[in-house]
Image 1 (cartoon, rainbow, N blue to C red):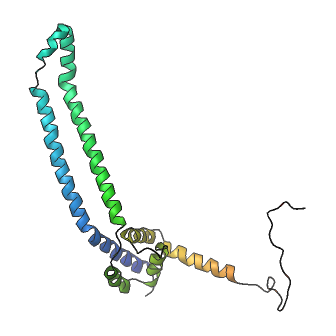
Image 2 (tube, rainbow, N blue to C red; image 1 turned 180 degrees about the vertical axis):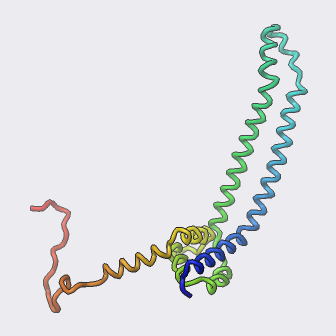
Length: 198
């Protein structure tokens, strides 16, 4: 099948749909975890703010009327909100770290052979060349992260770049009559040296 722009868009859409199907269970787990984290955050935040309204500041009278007045003006409106903000930052950092770790683990997930056998017949040869280009370490299986990279590379014209590399290689591999060695010639070229020229 010829790699027309429409055909490449269609193949890219197929790869995107495959990635979505592979990621769906992880996305459901992430969404559930985020909902639980938001519920816990709301509960603890409201508890902190209610605690601030229930705690009496009568013990501040030992600092004198002016000191007690000053601290009441600071503690009442700001302290509990500051604690709520700190709690919010802790929750955001924890949830973000968990999401990043989960997505990184998902990218390392090795593709089942059945996934490749399902999509391979529907892909044009040029798109398969991009998969081979991305899968440069043949000692490791193709992962979800590799398929994500294929999806990105198709958008950035990797097919055209691979074709250009092949054309340039063919040009450089050609020998011209001027550069060709005479048949049977035993002339050798001097070895390159790193030493100082004399």
